[in-house]
Length: 296
Ligand SMILES: Nc1ncnc2c1ncn2[C@@H]1O[C@H](COP(=O)(O)OP(=O)(O)O)[C@@H](O)[C@H]1O
Ligand SMILES: [Mg+2]
Image (cartoon, rainbow, N blue to C red; front, side, top):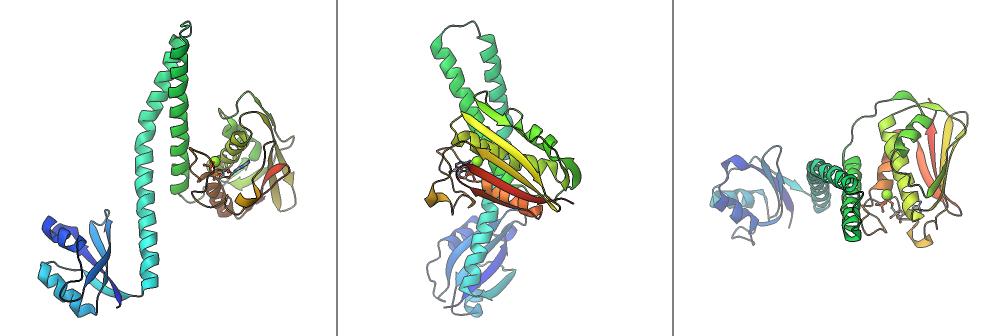
């Protein structure tokens, strides 16, 4: 049986009518609802229906007493990809909103616990210090996950300016390098046309991954190798590398091997680098992430 998509304005619909749409086994006209999508911006309900023909859907609407903006026949393949895209963008929008709303209260928790830590510096109660650490670490972990989500879903056009890569590296290192990690920065510098905020996200994601892979102790080396048209940025760590069987997946959205990872870091890096008409790859022994960016 063919598939159709139709659209209704939510304004005209009663709860009873929506219920009839949602719980719709094949009716006497042979019409079944497969999927319902709600678009908040337009306040519209889109339905994917299986039905013998367009007329049967019109009769089905008459029975429930609802108006319809359009009915379009569509192939199943198209419908499925439409469902997936719409669902994915709805999830993206929702997570961006939730992430954004959580960031401020979490920041408050983190600041407050840091103040408690300072004011209890002479308190020798070990349990208290442990609990303070637990809250601090949990808040930091959540803030990191929120940044991952926001960096992934928020896209804006590049704001290209001539920027020094050393400066971008420097600002991305702020507050992420623990004392137990040795970092060797490039001896040279190069300026390229790029979006500095975006490249900061790339550097901090790759370096954070390196720190996590080395379990907080080891060495990171960053190099800028300048060719005529490209600059090659290498970020090397002394961690264990990426297991053979995971190599194919590390740039996939949501792929993570960490208990509180998001799997959004590297895919975000890849998107940003490709927006800059560059490419990103990595190799093992030692683990090196390599980014090539055009010098414009
Ligand atoms: N420097 C690295 N060393 C070893 N494994 C890495 C390194 N960088 C990334 N990975 C692997 O790639 C996966 C995906 O990374 P990423 O997209 O940043 O997501 P997340 O950090 O949230 O797990 C990580 O979970 C990890 O398994
Ligand atoms: Mg990461």
